[in-house]
Image (cartoon, rainbow over all chains, first blue to last red; front, side, top):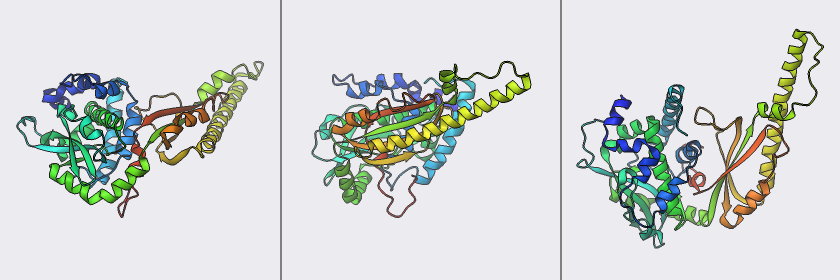
Length: 90
Length: 274
């Protein structure tokens, strides 16, 4: 279902990582967000930090800390299933 | 998540990228710049703190939507890279406490409430992280590379019978494997020793594996160090050439990063995931 949905989604342009970021509207003269984003770091290094690090807040949090672990598991399944068919682009 | 939801008219939630002290250049620096889904960034202030926030459609960032995003690697990557781009840009202007991915509040009022509640803890963390960067250090063991480098060493006995030659090769492989991992372990200890006087703190991440871990060899150490900005060069210098003479062992340094790995305060009473 994900395939169909994601192409039908309004934000489908974001499916291309670089395009999504550089296509951000505004074109402000100071484009440090875009240039920094252009300095691509390895996704796995980023996920280490964004899923294990970062300040964890509570409240309206959509995903609790426990859910992040769940995400990790789901994530690995996704990573395997994706890369077995088509190599990831990085 | 339903496909017919129109994110433009649908209600919005507040996605938090980072927290910083109020009254720094960051207050105005990024306002209006695009965040997730192109939504403009804004500062939400409470007391001494400010949160860098943008509005995201509830349909995509509510519980179900977020789970779907996280399970779709392409969308997860956009989410992670956009979050990171905002944090990086913010951290050019002020010390920031990066939030974990997918930190979403119902509205700005709740964000303000959270800032008020956690102010003592966050200001203490921000003080500690001020002027510091995070550097990643990864150590890899790659026995196959060790073999390529050291071939030319003692060859197997060419006169031996095929079976015996096979066993000799196997044994050589196993020895090489053990030697490489031992050497990698020694390099890892040497890393710790060399940066002990330079780094302010140290966190161990799980070694990277799976299909996203594309580097050659096996990752045996995946650590993060908190280093004062003025010491970053000294940190790199201390590790320069460390594994150059150790075939099959590689050291990689990543960063500087915003201090993601040091933004998680010791869990007050809940189970931290580290």
